[in-house]
Image 1 (cartoon, rainbow, N blue to C red):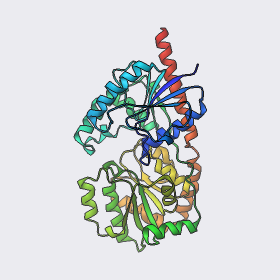
Image 2 (tube, rainbow, N blue to C red; image 1 turned 30 degrees about the vertical axis):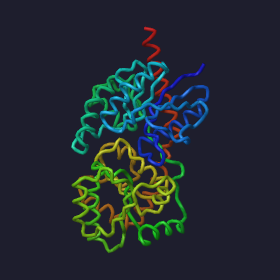
Image 3 (cartoon, helix red, strand yellow; image 1 turned 90 degrees about the vertical axis):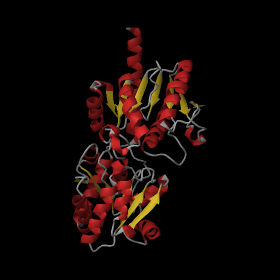
Length: 384
């Protein structure tokens, strides 16, 4: 008889996958296929799209209420999920977003992607901040094991929450395999459609304070003043966290007409937009990984990224690493990539090599190993 594995899949939402949602999707679609004799109970907080029920060994479970607010998180995890786990008695509860049921006795593996809320709490609304800072230390202590997406995040979790290093496994993210170079003719069509034919720097991500958009806008303005080029800045992502500092930085730009907002894009469109970019400007001041870095590497697009948190670990020597708090440094990196063709070629070649270190196949293998360690630890505890 195979294993019974319950999974928190509440972030598998059609056309709304972001970082953690993609991690969940890409890993589970592989793990489910590779382990057909095991049963997977996907726990949703609303009716799931059929495309997320990957195989016959996936059984969807819908629990209410929809968990989209801190108070509803508590009800969903501590009441609905706990009762379901108590009834099912699975071998493991896997939570790809790190949230657990503190009242459950099921062995659990929490995937904690980063602890940005511990370092920059003011970036979050009060209730969300309170929930994360109250519950995540407790989740970390309660979890049978923890997985995370970089060595930086592992060290952060160990330091912040005092958990043993041997309790935390590193499972690097991958990048969608469709991300690859596209012909110059297609690139020109993308640019014609989005930026009137002009080359562009690309930002990809939720428009959240830690993504450092305010400084990116100021830096792009500086770049425009010091460069003769007609390069644009293309911003891909939802204005979910469009805060006053971000709005103010944008409103004060002299060259705001050269900034183009695309909103959210599907995976195919994002691939074409990334592969047509002059470079990506991924200058967050806090990341647990940074999937757009790897996507750009796969597309043969140079990368400007920050020299702090997990970004140097992901980028290695294949990107221009800059101080994300220094607008002038960001602007100068942009200018370098417009003017220095040898540097561009060197970064592109290095990026192709670097991208091979990160794949969803490897991620799924590592996550499965972490899941098996969790079950094994639980079994040993029961026997002792």
